[in-house]
Image (tube, rainbow, N blue to C red):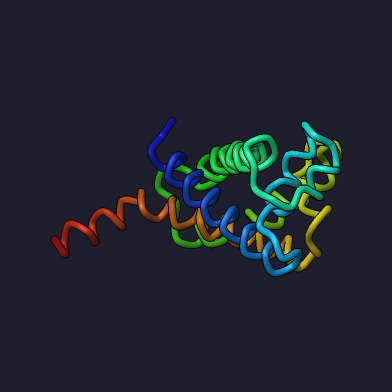
Length: 155
C-alpha cells in the first residue's frame, strides 16, 4: 500500500469519524448512535439506537468506516494518478463526495451502506461525506511532490 493511500485513509477516516461524533452529539445528545449505526451490517438497525460508545457497536462502526474510506482512498489514488495536474486534482476531489455517496446509497445493498440515514438527515450526511473528502484530500496533498518541495524550502 502506498503512503499516499495510507495518508488519505487516515485523514478521511479521522475527519468523517469526527463529523459523525459531533453531529451525533448535536442530533441525539449522545456520541453513540452516529458511530454505532455503521455497525448495522452486523447488528441490524437497532445498532443506531445504542446511545453509548462500546466495543460491540462503536468499534465495529469505526472499523467499518475506516475500511470504506480505505476503499475510496484506493479509488481516489487511482483517479488522481501519479502526478495529477491541478485541474485533474480539483475535478477528481470535487467528484469524490457525490460519487461515493451515490455508490454507497444507490449501488450498494442496503445492509452494506454506511447506515447514516438511520440517525442523520441528508444535509448531515453531506457534511460527513464532505469531511471525508477534505481529510482524504489533505492526505493526498501531504504526499504530493510539490508539497514536499515546499517543506524542503522552508526547512
